[in-house]
Image 1: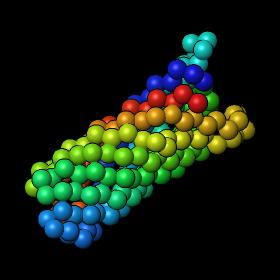
Image 2: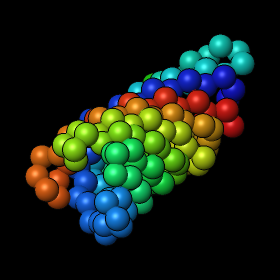
Image 3: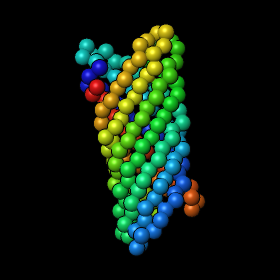
Image 4: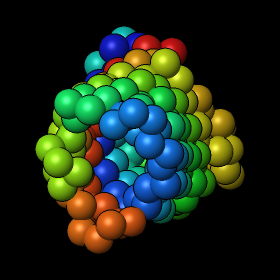
Length: 167
């Protein structure tokens, strides 16, 4: 399926941070647990549209560097696995999604972080079932997010993803 456009909303992102300070700069390892809700619309060359809805727990890990002025560069990955509802099928299908990418953000005194990013690995797989064969989609994705510090080791955030599957 070509010319595919997808939007994703991660509704909850909880993370804890461990870090080592280096001359007023910091390196963070951020594990995360969240809940990802996606609504995917696939359009093929015959203009047939298929809608896929997913909602499942998301697990992630980031390695971040923050300088003294609050600019942060992060390398991270995320994995999601659950059940997908496909518009033209009656049964739910199992799916998995893995993403890895880079982001740059601004951290305001450690209380609020805004970031933008892109992925170099973005793969969405719908498992084979009695109604369909395995489908695998990949392509670039872009993220924009906002994270609030709730406790010293707990953050709450929202992320919007724009996936453009071309394979």
